Length: 77
Length: 254
Image (cartoon, rainbow over all chains, first blue to last red; front, top):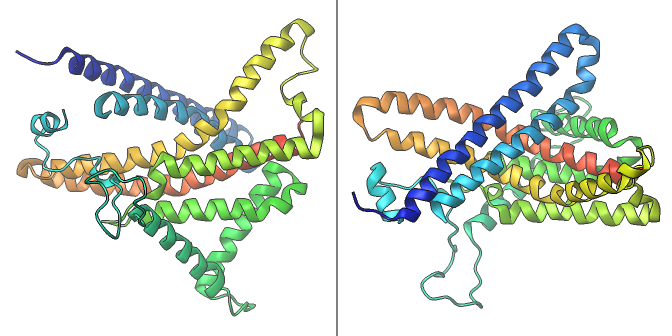
């Protein structure tokens, strides 16, 4: 069992960063679920709010992408 | 370190190799030469997507017929879609910036879609490419805000409808969130595209184990379907956020 302690640390860090990606998935699901709940209550207003839906999805998802980027930086840079 | 990673996972190719830039003419890389200049595969695929846009929007709509041909109706569909989005999100007086937004949308859409072709190169997977787009939008919107509104543009940070003692705190938070915009704007696009393509290549790597290769092929097909969706959605998200930032510059009070 020989190895570089730095590589071990970056691998563990990359795994921890993957938790961030998973939490972003929760956030994206939350946005979509609440949009759907609102849209089913008032379908006539749903079409006008799709732009807001996508903006919300984008903001929630960006932070997950940041976590993914941290994992990539730890593993490959 | 990369060698050990290869051996440990057993991949004969690396999932990130597809993002390698390589010069089209001459051999760059061997010894560093700052004056070496060549077109790279990124340049080539950006040029191909510009050519695709030209074919769709100039050649296919040349006849300007009342009953549109297939190409013309696709072009009209995209035009109407983006036109409506600009009107809805950025306001009616943002119409004069519509050409910029349509150009951004088409460039990102075509680069994403051409990047999905096998053996091709995705220019939007590079932060260098998307950062130029993101920071370009950021600088344009900031300059436009100051030119149109002057000092009133700073009202974006100084919320007059908040209690006075909270305003400095809100101003700091708003300033930080304003300057993070171009970073998240560009990394979102590059990160999404890069992540999706990496996942495809990781699934493709599973195919060399005979027992799971059918599932690997199914996985690649499924992820590829999602990637087609992501390519369109990310182009849409990039342009819709451009519209949101543009609205802030046009009407900083709201």
